[in-house]
Amino acid sequence: MTLSIRNQIPGTVSSVTEGAVMATVRVRVAAGQELTAAVTLDAVKELGLAPGSAVRALVKATEVALATGPVAGVSIRNQLTGTVASVSTGGAMAAVQVVMDGGGELTSAITADAAAELVLTAGTPVVALIKSTEVSLASA
Picture 1 (cartoon, one colour):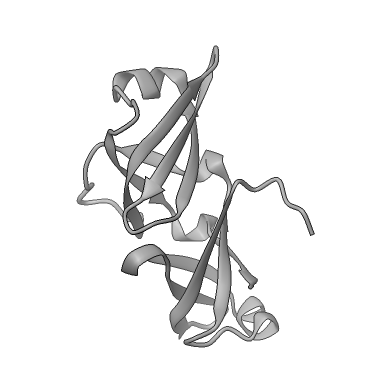
Picture 2 (picture 1 turned 90 degrees about the vertical axis):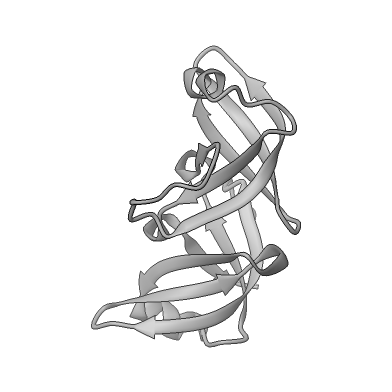
């Protein structure tokens, strides 16, 4: 299956915490960075998710926010560190390619104004912020 989702990050499930209807799944990605996905218990069972399972974390580029440093005091679970590889700016939007520390890439679609205000250029260190509810999982 081919998807339009730019961010398809390979990883390995490190833990699954089940609730009544939902579960949080921690996934180890590039060089030890971790990503948390909030998915249904049905998805956990259908995908056979357990520690050691190989998965792909899927995140739309529009759901990846960027900051120029770590952000404290927010509920966003995923803060992946990296460096801007390139910025392509159009009239309203910018596509920012980020190389995650330890390997792997992410694409973030943000407004051109935000890219300009953050002074994002190749080499800028950034933190990619992704809500756990915006992370989907697929079996690898």
